[in-house]
Structures are given as structure tokens and as C-alpha cells.
Image (spheres, rainbow, N blue to C red):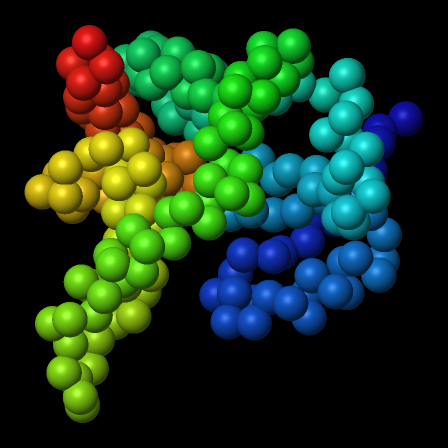
Length: 210
């Protein structure tokens, strides 16, 4: 007896992305599990609902170790070229399972306590002031590209002691990595840019830490 394939549900087409929240609400009302077309050649099972997502995150049968799986959308003949990229992703905390994830998270939590974050307020306010200073009344800017995208990268760079002159470069590297990791249709071009960015970041911090 042949199994009937579940119906794929679209969530990322252009029309839905203009205002995705009605679609999210409808799917949430229909149930916690959906077979979703994310625009790649492989649809995915997606879990909706806070309780269900929380339960899966805590279930030891589910693993976060999926660095190598990020290469699956690439041609099989090209995947070996990006083994270093997959290896570096596997070193990210979000791609680790307990107990290693737990150990690292405890260490990082100290730097993100409410008191530690509040102590950053003067730096963040100063950064925002510098970003707004060139603007004049009546000017038109792309708020996303000119402010919303670079601001978090600059804050994180300052937290890590990266010189301001390198904030733009860090933004470029971060975007290359995010574009590869966040795209359902990862291409060889995206992978090459992400691997190059990851190598540059690794080299920079290796020298800096030393």
C-alpha cells in the first residue's frame, strides 16, 4: 500500500511574505504540525505552538547537531569543497547538544545578565547618536540597510572589542554567513561567500585572542 504524501503548505511566497501573520495564525489554529514548502527542493515538517516547540527543544531524541546538513542543498559533487564550513558551523553553540551546549551557555549567560546588558546602554546610545548624526531633516533613507542592519553588528562588535573601523567589514562577513544559513535554497555561491567570511572571522579572532 502506497503512503499518500501530505499536502505542502506555502509560507514563503511573495504574497504571504507581505503580511505573513494571518497565515501563521491559521496554521496555528489548524494544529501544531505542518508540512511546509520553504522554497527548496525538500519541504520540511514545521512545528507551530510554543508548548510543542518547547517540548521538542527539551527532547533528548532531537539533536541540534546539524552543521553538515546545511550543505545538503548543494550539488553532491561540490559539497566536499565546503567541509570546513560545515565543521565551523558545528562549533557554534546553537549546533551543540547537552552537556557541551549547557556548559557553554552557562559561561555566556554571565555576559548577558540584566545588569551586564544595562551597562551597555551608554555605548549603544552613543553608537545610535553617531549613526543618526549625518541625517538632516527631510532626508530619505532606507531604514533597514542604513540603520537596522548595521546597528546590531556594531553593538556586538563593540562588545567584543572590535575596532570601529572594522565594523563595516564585520557586517559584510555576518551577512554572508546569515544569507547562507537562513536561505532555504543554499547555493554554491552562497556557500563560498559564507566559508570565506567564516575563515576571515576565525583568523581575526585567533590573532586577537593570542
